[in-house]
Length: 369
Image (cartoon, rainbow, N blue to C red; front, side, top):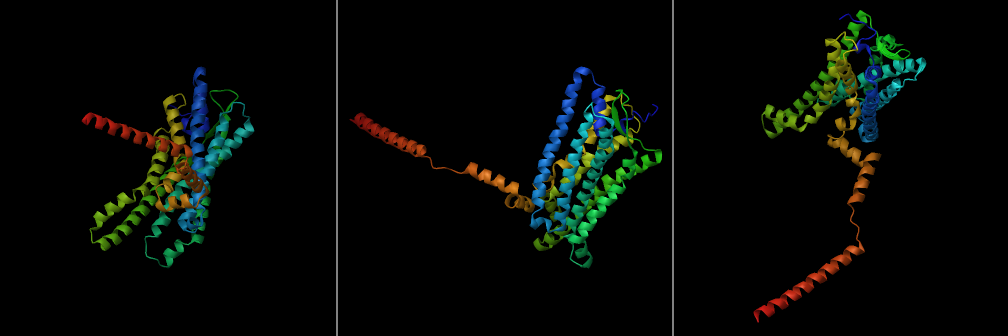
């Protein structure tokens, strides 16, 4: 198949991919497809906003944000929230009456920022685990320096700047073009020259695998340090203790695995099917789904970092605004109120039982006689 950059599936943005799928569907199915896409994105974004607002409320507490890990998690939650807001803004591209200028702004600015903040969250995820692993080492000058709040803030600033620089080529190559299947409409595409296309594939691979392996390595270092100390303390073998600690702290592997599972399909599809026409519907929808599930890790921040952590969940329950409201509501629902009607009913039942017992004793006497 001759590659036509104007209709290549993997050059389309997420919203333009949805719109192309809708426009190439039969007229009687277009409303259903539009509802399905809008409902899916809105549901994910709504859930993600709630999750990240609760996470921000938890991580902003002094007991957490006073640590370097807390600073990373607070920044991660803020970036996730911003990225999800950018995602829902991209849905405005589905409006047929949208003129060129607002479509251009959404395509070149909003979509680019959504992509950038998704990658920032991947790197923050990996460096959060790295900061956590530093707690497993014996304190010295270098370790204390890396664990300081000032260094953590500088690291976060450098990560954000670096990711922006690694996406300059994407921001430049984003273009708004006439829709090939709907005259008078527009689509958002990324048109890379061959050299920049190879560079983009390299960057995409680095964005996925380096944070993933950094997270895994850091988590394994934590388990190694804990296992070594407890093996000496309890006089057990190292590997037996390591397996035990792995089962205890297995939730630490959830975040990198989910991030990998959600981001890898889009990279694999773009590498395997480098030139596919939009007429192949199943690949068009598969590409749309792969671009959409990238945002799942940003939508479940609360469950990735708070729900399975005893310390963070206790902070959420006892110190955060939403945790206090939740506990107050639960306590109110579980509270037992002394009702007069209940006491009256118990007295009546007691009298009825006494009367029945008296009648039964009389019957027994009559039977015996």
